[in-house]
Length: 334
Length: 180
Image 1 (spheres, chains in turn purple, yellow):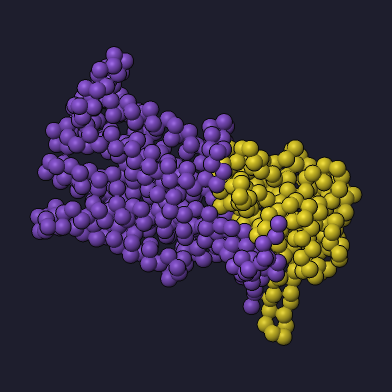
Image 2 (tube, rainbow over the protein chains, first blue to last red; image 1 turned 90 degrees about the vertical axis):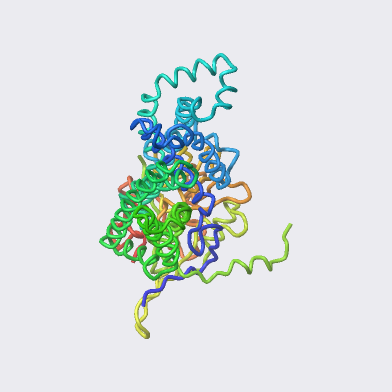
């Protein structure tokens, strides 16, 4: 027997009995950030591959969603901060060893680049918005410039959007103290998942048949890549140290088994992959809108389950005898 | 860089918790929060059981992952020592350092929201005093000093007694030692 008991009261909020510092706010940001990266990458790729006719929505309208989605994500991220008034401190320094610091600066760069990407196609995609922008001389000048340099902007979008999509995974994997996250492929997994959710969003919104077909096929490829990356992360944990194997147990029979295998793997990957195959082979079209919805649910489920299981994974295990609810029964002092 | 270490004798610690009370009093730690705590570790099979008491806190790691992962530089090593402090004016409360600490030694100050932790009582260390927990220990099982001074009590104890640190596998290079 080996038992480690806390004999003095330790009921630090968010830390005891097990770490739960980050909840849905952060999962939502991880999802929205990935989706934004996916949106920007997909829109840029369509521009670079001259898909204006085949995929008009993704080429000239999709990009507008990027800053909107990202702003929702950043809002929930802000909600998570405990010392909110000091949020500006992200921008008074750059910490080279901290992926979160990299992320803060990536976000700052992504916004203007996203605006340039929107302006480069705004006249084709949103004529009334373009008319509004063109009313200002400066707006007209910038839009002219962006249209002329559409391809160059698309090239510039890709590395920054990839950075946005990948850094969240690297951020989590950098926490050596949380064995569940210690997988080098987590960054890639988040990036591919972000692209997959963006492709699903296009299938959901686009009207043109050729575009729906193109993005269904693209999404299927991304889902297969995601399945491979999930398998690699599990293998990486299973072949790690005792702590990593223990962390893996949380999704292999432990408390997050259902969320991981049913909500993420089955609902988010396998079922939509099957539906997309059926749809592409022309067997069943009736459930065509279900697949992209499931992919979006799966994308969020991935972030939530990785976030939760990772926080609970630890190097130290105490059984706490202290019941923090008893504190409520103390008479008020002062 | 000066390396301060705490050396705690598990053979004489009785798990009374005075160190915890001393810390709360000295540092005015709010209700329900603790910067240090006592662990009772029991091993073996009845009747052959061994018990070890450990007073635990931030390990003031030489390679502190909470410092490397802090996005704003709020978590830092104080005055070129291994003492890890949080500058509340730089802290956004993002909690990255809490996730980064393998010892779960950090906490969210309420109601303010910045991150707090054991400071090795650096305000006392600055005056040449021991941290509050060390100076209040009734069994004198806690010792504090510099590892750079070859004649310090902590160095003497580490040279002459068997000792361990907690989960050295994390690579954090902790500086709270337990005599066993």
